[in-house]
Length: 303
Image (tube, rainbow, N blue to C red; front, side, top):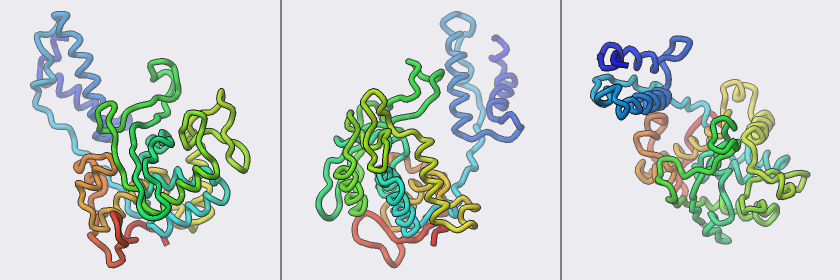
């Protein structure tokens, strides 16, 4: 344990934490998480008298910067998103609103899984509405949860517990959500996207009703992609992940002239975190910017 007080030893440990098993550099978020775990483990030794202080607090070691960038070819433009949503409405209509939330409201998949009737604070007959997000539903392994559950209800990312985030609802999203509530309603606990059965998307009995599984979302998204996109677009991974819709929505807002600070607030991200991945995709307002807090149809590899 005393060896950790030597800078060269501790630097070597940190270098190992910054490396994947195949020898390649680990992602910046992975490094941060590993360092935090190491810090907690070493800190445990301090009150036991094994170390006078935590050497990680004073070591001069710079974490490698993340080189991850989002490929603009993976981000669908607005017209392609509409075609994907129309296809989903055709064969799995109770999940159309889920995918629409990822794009129009820039929600994370776990935030969309958490969406309930209480979050739909304003869905007018026409025009813009508003959502009030208050949490996320994460899918985890039973061994990694405190109570053995495969789901965990958490606060919004980058927000303290019990805080909320207001997001404007695009008029098209408003209509999709209104249609969802009218046709399919919500699960027994008020959540919109739950386990359903049959063509009409009826929620299963209370004892079996759970938030829609990420695997179900992935299957629906993959089926829509293969129906709508060309073989070349599928091969280039256009809209391959639900997260690609969120990133496309963020970039759409930026290209429409909405400030990075405002978009970050709506998307629930720090400006630093968002721009790090979307750098190079912001091209400024386009010529066809519609009114309201959104922008032109100018990103990605869609048609």
